[in-house]
Image (cartoon, rainbow, N blue to C red):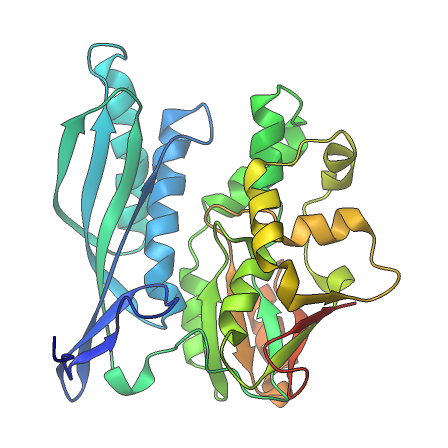
Length: 315
């Protein structure tokens, strides 16, 4: 089939969303994401799922405009009030993002699932891809990691309340402000959001098949306070091991990096932060502006290198 010349980003790569050009100065960003509950509170689940779905548009540098609900629910097993709370949580975050809910679709299913199909807009000349980082760039991460580990501990009844609050706070925070500050900063070359493949999994996507590599400063990566104790108890999700097994061939770990920290860098995230590649001279200024605006975990976590190609050095 002949490729569509207006398709800027599609299914051929690891992009966060599809992008379709409408005119010389307008393109649509199209994304869809939904999943099963990762917290017990249905209202918080709705918030997290909505924030997660909206994040793909922010990662491309765009502005989300409309959303449609995707809902699976067992009405014969669970009271409808739970469904109402899920949808209310999602709607509140949709409104916070200044997005219009235009409809949706529901099916009866044995397990609840919720998310959004989101449409956004962007100037086609300003689309941020995930694999266009340049040697010399610095890497900024905008949220702490560890949500997969916290969710696993929660299922085991061993997630401390303070740690759970930090994780939920991160997952329910829109990437809107971070994205708005990012697109106003000159010299931004690439961006992705950190979700199910973990920090290092998505970092691998940024350089796979390219002539660049990455250095990751492992101690600079923001982590939830109290997470190490939960890791020591063995609450590591299965997805972490799958991510690690899949991508370790692209990773070189320097001496002195403890195994628990390497594992953490593969932890599958839900509604994680943005990973931004930009000119070195702009990095610290953007971090400061983000922190001043409430994106308090933003940090420089690495750099883009010429060699080794398509490899990540963790130090």
